[in-house]
Length: 333
Image (cartoon, rainbow, N blue to C red; front, side, top):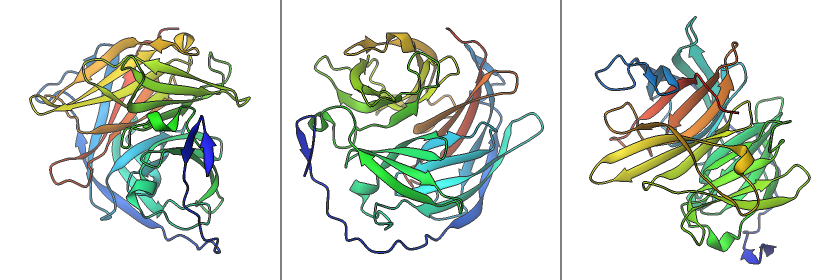
């Protein structure tokens, strides 16, 4: 029994057995290029965002899908992600000479626990967010709310390092609305290397969305993000200047699904603060979107931030695996 912030979390005892080598599935994803973000329109600019291109992806492995988090490397080719069914996904984003995505090669392997055993139960394997710091990968899980750290090994496997609780009272986290957004702030910016997490829809006493900051010295604090227009938060990414972009999703029967990108000022994130931000983009079913869940931000050679966004198809026949990319042509310091 381990106590965190006054709440008691029960972790199932693990039978310690020698770790077994994990099988890796390697395959080419079947991909169709998306040339138009707004359906039936050649419009490329949407406020400060410029649509670069996208992919609709399928096949290659029956386990491919349910993609919930992505971290794209600085070279904008290699990536690592998680599926909420308990798999790592890594590989390469194929691009043309102009940098537009044209395809995907991928590998899948099961996420393992401290004993090196694949995590197969859905309530334990529900990986929703991912961020990278050197050769360490940090993954946020919901249902069994926790933040686990893995190391990328030379053979391409991922070895469990440690687990910790989110820096909020666990009893306040909804079962399926945990920390879908985590990320490391850039060094020498306002939050200076801190791990930041924001829940999907776990609300504080004022009905705003709960978040935390864990500083590099181990200290931490809570903050909140204003919840508006029934949007829930599904991921975050840091801009080079240290400010954040959050990816949000809304679903209702009347209007279907929508996505939103909102920018938060890192200087406003302080203990017990409630922050809001500018809406950069809001898109509904008139656009090429689905259940958008993962966001990664890289930088083009000219310094322009590039947003890579992926969707979770829930292994449903009526949903799609999408990868969309935008350039952010202006930033606010």
